[in-house]
Image (cartoon, rainbow, N blue to C red; front, side, top):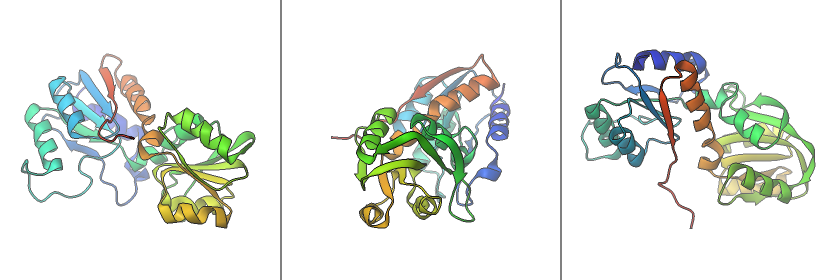
Length: 255
């Protein structure tokens, strides 16, 4: 299977039609589209350490959730982070591709995995009006105290810490991995007792107890990293002969 064939396989699984208009994922670096893919490195983020591991490890493809070329670059020179990583990959013959908001929205993707890890049943998509339905809302088997659910979420996601706003009993839970602040009102309108995301925002969290919607910030990384195993499995579905490894992001530390 070539680089181009692998990308087409993944794009069929995760259609661009599901992407947010502002997104810029896809195949961003392909020095040799016809190159045979023997090794793929999967990561949540294309950090400098991940890029270096892809090059030094002899990988043919770096596959990430977050795009390398999220914003436009004005010069392909190694004095800034993104161009430097792009040059490093291209010069080493390593292709890079990512699947971002479409992987949030697709069935079985980021937010379905997040809902499953939290034990939600009867899960349905939701989103602000006119936006891609990235979020998920479902119910716990039985009502829980908000503090107990926060502890459950921390343990289930392997998060170093979670931030809880609000109290009382919760059962109908809305989730959105990553940066979910824009989904707060949609979660409330959908009847959620609690909204969990990676990041929601200080002032929204402060207002939560006063507006009847408990909220949990569980960390951008913790809410999205589980998608890496799913991406690795999807590559193996495309070609079981490909060697696939997963690399965690270690650029940020909780002290």
